[in-house]
Amino acid sequence: MLKFTIQSIILLIAFQSAFAQFAWEDYYDITTIPAPKGVDYQVGGIDINAQGELVACFHRGEVMIYNEKKQEWRRFASGLNEPLGLYVEEEGTILVVQRTELTRLHDKNTDGKADFYEVVSNDWGFSGNYHEFTFGIVKDSQKNIYISLGTASNGGGVDQEIKGTWNNTGGLEQEDFFASKKYGDWNERKKKIARMYARVPYRGCILRIKPGSLKTEVYATGLRTPNGLYMDKNDQLWVSDNQGDWVGASKIHRVEEGGFHGHPASLLWSDNPPSITPADMPRDELNAMRVKAPGLFPQGECANSITQPLPLKGNFGPITSKPSNPEQLIIGEMNHARVLRFMPDNVNGTHQGTGAHMLISNDLGAGNNRLVCTPDGKSVYFGKTHLTWPGREGIKKVTYVGKPYLMVESVKLTPTGFKFTFNAPINAPEDLDQYTLESYRIAYHAKYGSPKNELAQEPCSKVTVKGNTLTLELKEKPKSNRVYGITLPADITSELSDLSSNKFWYTAHSVY
Image 1: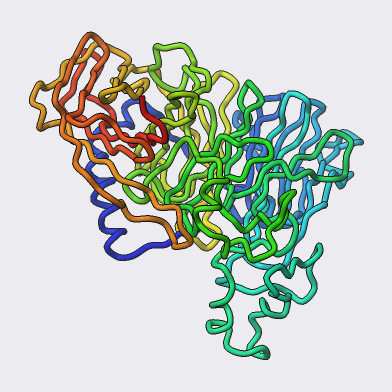
Image 2 (image 1 turned 135 degrees about the horizontal axis):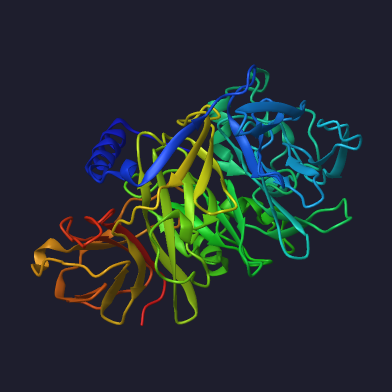
């Protein structure tokens, strides 16, 4: 999931400190939800029930309900296996996704505790590898359920007793993945195993479960660690994925049914599986097949290990424009005390857009794994975890206090550069040297992550400010298949405040 060096940690600390200057705490109230007694306070899923109470599942298998007025937790269920997704249904039942099962919790005698654990589906595999997480849960308007399965890692082996059928494509048998010394030196033997693999069904896939069905359908392939799902108002599924092999930077996917989204491991479970180990397929062939993610979040400076997306509602910030279609998203992050934002764009029918920071605060803390918005849209709960990686534990409630501040509401590509729209008229420097842009390619390859390939500076030739818009024209027209890192002057101001965040990362798959 993560990979750090001392140099990258120093860079990240310096970067985060630079942007801690904006007083986010003046605009957002951040409070801590007290821990339930006797519970490992790592949160796998959160939702809000019909009574407005917070419902959460925890690392060691408990499901509990929090009454915020009374500041009291009560236990609803226990005994689940590392649940990493929770959904409160209209009927009052609670869906929880465990490592190997999607479970519906019923309280049939209405005593406030689950008394019937219904198996909704367990139609997928599990090899015992530590990295085979199961994530969820969202529904579409037809009440289809969607979950996602993480791939296994060659950082560990598999068990002798597995769930599901072993796939030995490429001549790799199950015993080749045993890490026991009985079978020889694991560090040597694992060299013939892809960094991330999917040898049991349906690792690296998005699964759909139709109402009343025990069977899963492979909805899409090509994911590595799809830790965050969101279904928008148009039944469009969005999924986040984390940097790693074949994932040059953390990214947000706009999932296409039947689509291959880049990581090859899960092709073993596609309609037309390859006859060789997927990671050994020609890169150009894989690249031609894949659905590109609309948003790339370069490692470190923009994001590390992104998590659950949510729509950015107008009550959670000083937003003046009507919700776009598709909606802007806020996204959690495991490893830093910040909230990300994705601003969509569409160029020549291609979905792409801009990553930015919505909020940075040490009071928030890291480990923000699961998000849920309150019904009034003013607050977001952030459930935290670490699962042996950098992160935290607990739940924070972040509430917008209603005080306006200056923010960029949208970023759009133009034939000659970029157009920024703010939530208020601005004053901005005319000195072109204060506008810094660079472009580079994020590699699609089997290596872990990607450097900034073909890095180039992109000087401005003209800056135009008109009311609440700022247009940048570049000396060279924007180029396709590049990420543009854009830094606006920190001294852009308005009657509201200074600019809250001035760094942006635009993913330009297509240009005009």
